[in-house]
Image 1: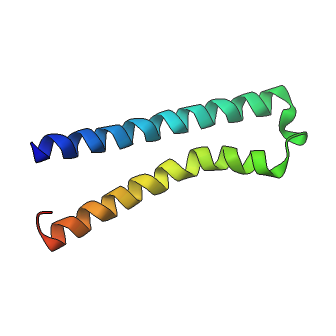
Image 2 (image 1 turned 60 degrees about the vertical axis):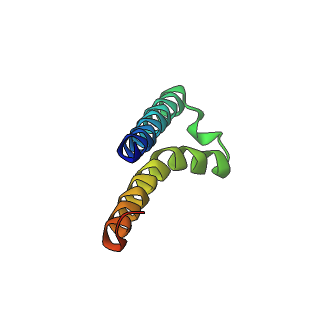
Length: 75
């Protein structure tokens, strides 16, 4: 049962990361092709960068958590 929970959690994190990256790329495409890049405030531009960068960071932290759990033994 524990393996099912781990697999479901990992699959969910991967799914959300992929969706976030796809949405971020779509927003960047819309912003650059619509010519709105010059009118956007810095905070919104950071939001676009966050949509692309944070899922990658989350995946790295998930991998680190799994490696740490293996070193310490079964949870």
